[in-house]
Amino acid sequence: MPNPVTAALVIIGNEILSGRTTDANLPYIASKLNQIGIRLMEVRVVADREDDIVAAVNACRNAHTYVFTTGGIGPTHDDITAQAIAKAFGLPLERNAEALARLTRQYAPGDVNNARLAMADMPHGAILIDNPVSGAPGFQIGNVFVLAGVPSIMQAMFDGLIGRLKGGLPVLSRTVSCYLAEGAIAEGLAALQRRFPGVEIGSYPFFRARRFGTSLVLRAEDGALLARAVEQLRALVTELGGEPIEQEPV
Amino acid sequence: MPNPVTAALVIIGNEILSGRTTDANLPYIASKLNQIGIRLMEVRVVADREDDIVAAVNACRNAHTYVFTTGGIGPTHDDITAQAIAKAFGLPLERNAEALARLTRQYAPGDVNNARLAMADMPHGAILIDNPVSGAPGFQIGNVFVLAGVPSIMQAMFDGLIGRLKGGLPVLSRTVSCYLAEGAIAEGLAALQRRFPGVEIGSYPFFRARRFGTSLVLRAEDGALLARAVEQLRALVTELGGEPIEQEPV
Image (cartoon, rainbow over all chains, first blue to last red; front, side, top):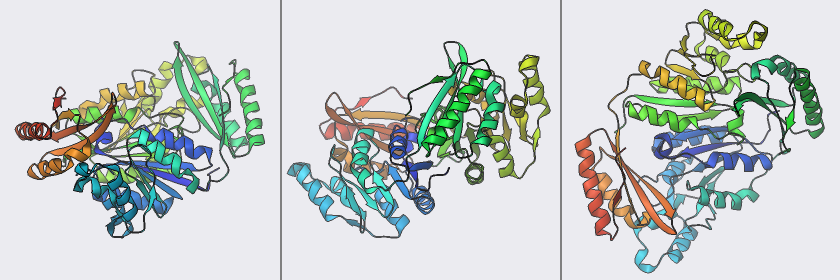
């Protein structure tokens, strides 16, 4: 069931790789993309190094419909995303007139400085992405969308650009949980997967209130097919002595 | 200051890419590696697809000293990490005798089944990684360490294998925060970075108690060099009208 509209996310930042900061953007972007029928297929976390960013962006933009990057678009010396994206596309980096106008309006005259204005430097031909939180815009170039790393800003940018994305059929998902160990249900589950090649079945163990259990996530574009698979899964769980607990469809 | 001993992490699992599950293993592994002088340079999140796992593992194991994978080593049909690693190395997948003995001991005779025993299937030559939490071992093959995805199990496995890793000089880190905007300190900071090429300076904006501020993270292997850079950074913050707030060295 590989969704034909796919995406990749490139997370840029030493702070993620050092463990200092825990990324919160992946789950947000993944969920939003799901809702509009775009499947996130790949994520890469890279350091604030130009060669690493260029390599990751070029690999991803050739393999996927859309690429999103987060991080590295602020005013400090370690913010090198715009220049790396320009290099990845073989385009000159230039001061974007509209971005410059926005930045100039935003700051009191005494607060304007070169570091802040450099946030208007983007690859030639970039289309701005609004930043309603802190002003400095992101940008789109080709199929690559360049966003801030701070989650509140990234989310506002993403929500604003979502109208530019063209998704496929949304992937429907249902979850059935039970207090059976994965190993107890594995064989029946593999048979179910063979009977429903059009449904992607994921199995996730959990340990809750001192009991082992398994959450089974079924995903498909076809709602009727999904419903039949869920029905057979519930029967399997019951047959093995478990009680199927279904969460609200999401 | 690129640390010569580097690592990559390959996170395997559709549940991360769909946004259902938020990864918690990256920060743990990054912090532990830091402590022993190994630098995490790259993370890839891939789907439960053999080709994707093979490509990511092969790219990473050729580029870095160590590679860690998380996820996909349970008993269900979507757990395909072991076979993908075998394929990446061009090695046969075979039932590991010691892993089989452990699994057989662990289950009551009535609970032994093919799905559970298949967790003993590993590439030829694999060295086991103990799993004190739930029994089924991970494994090492070459420079690749294959771990569970459930954080409590992954952490126990990682803590047990850490003696097999040979690190370089630990990277020391100090953080100075202030209530100055990034854009206000950016130019002075860039000059500081030029004066201290051996110190990696990262700048991270924050918004706390309705005030904008910046956390500056300085990292170096040389403690004396790091101390001089921190001293000059504190002077810069003060000169710009801010108050340097230093957290405990970590």
